[in-house]
Length: 171
Picture 1 (cartoon, rainbow, N blue to C red):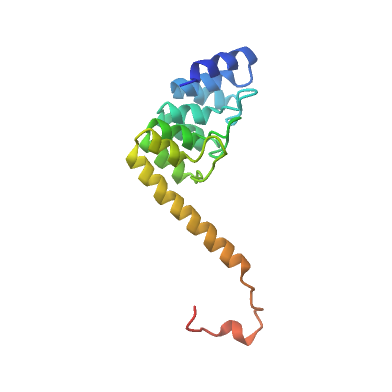
Picture 2 (spheres, rainbow, N blue to C red; picture 1 turned 90 degrees about the vertical axis):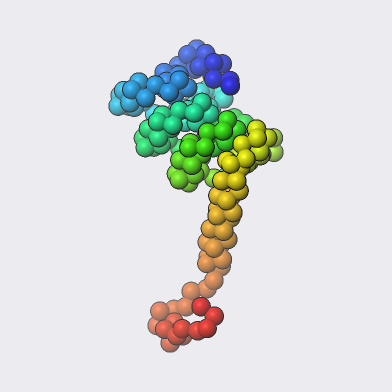
């Protein structure tokens, strides 16, 4: 992956470089120390915006991903191109990390014109089991959005209305 270049850029510019490098290599004890010292778990590499969570997810560091998420890492954070941790994990075939990110409400529909959705990357890399997981998660996500938008468009009956206590066959 491009992690070596990210590490070099991070080292040259500072700004969370040690967290980026530790996440890239899966150094959980180092990450714990850095976070305990107050390092921002969502600090991105300047210009690129690459986050520790994305590097850990793409490199298959499950425990690192878990620690970063438990420490408040933004599961929806993107870099300059729109790449997310879910894109990284799906493209590299890291099934358990994809499951963990989905459990933390990572969006399957996050996309831009160039990159497409994580599903596209899983398919392109031949990770069929992950692609199926993402299809199911995408359908669930769409269903939830439809339900929420449908409920929001329905007028609420006043609580004092006699109709509000009636149960109809349509419910």
